[in-house]
Image (cartoon, rainbow, N blue to C red):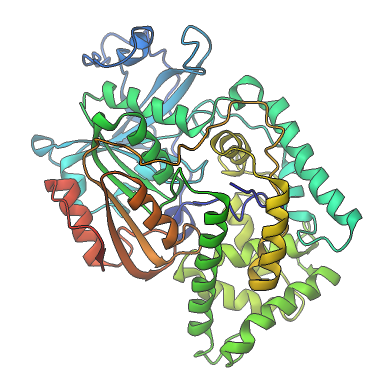
Length: 522
């Protein structure tokens, strides 16, 4: 699956919708680390019995959990568990994975534990659980303990910060649409160098941040909370993770909801097709909204609106937009294209995009730069949030997808420039920077996934720029027991986003186990 060198981000599916569309307060601090194998006797919860795991993993599947009130949220409980860095060498080094549990509102009615992943890769499941009252219906929260976790190597789970602040700035600073051989050489050379520096700085742990290993960690969590089957809600990249779990452990699938999806079987060609479709439908929806407004930056002509954006990008390549900031005095196509794309993730950000384009057409980039910096967690001082999803992007993606053919990517780039010129300008040169990644790489099976699993609910918006509906439909078809529900909405993230029809199907499935007929349109 191709990476987009412009920032190695735009083709990376699944920046989590809730994190983009809702303000998030600082994450409450985790309790001090307590060894999972030596908890405090007075506060330890004995580990439930667990079967069906290899004998050499018994220590992980039967460890005791030391739940304590989460700092700042005493009604929530936090703990840490140990998982092997390398499942092939369980006696070796371990990751400590941070968990946050929000107890069911009515424990006597509890169905089980609902494990969450909000996307990324690299988004915080701890924060997702912390704000679950805004993200899940009362019906769901009444009967489930909500369990969020930061995946191995991310956030509070022994974070592997393999990129420096300068590395992350460089992802946005280079010209993503090189005009000559020298510019292309610099773009590709920097991307390769950043990847190599990440592998060196991250060491052995960076080589074991794959989604397959995270899925195995989730099975340990399932056993430790006492559930015979995994109940799971995954958004965006989280759908990929959920699908991998279902394929690894089909007999342990409980109620899985995969929202805004991507299939583990997706090919480069399919990804390109879906990405273009998602972008075109989203930019068209924004333009349709904008041109009806008196203050639309793009005027009143829908046909000319895309050309204005394309012309702006061309102009910015020649004369970067000025800013009033001291840390970044001007921005080029990298920051600008990323900001435009991120504003399409939700209708809530269409006004920001309109105001930002108005400012950009006058030569200023403050509004769009501020939005882009907020998405990636960059401060005015030039430092990036340790929890920024950028830290996880290279180790996870390079482990999850086999390297793409350079010749095929070049052909796709040429075709995209001709057939989809604005998308091509925004995403930049297609190049896979994972070719030299030294770790093990997953090989997609290309066959039906999760044979024998219980029904799995797959949902998605018809106009989603991040995980387009084509990918959601593919995952529903690739899963042997996939059930598809679509939403006639814009943006990224489907459940609890304003479509009561979708919400009723999801709530009925999670709470009562009611499986809707497939191919439901809401």
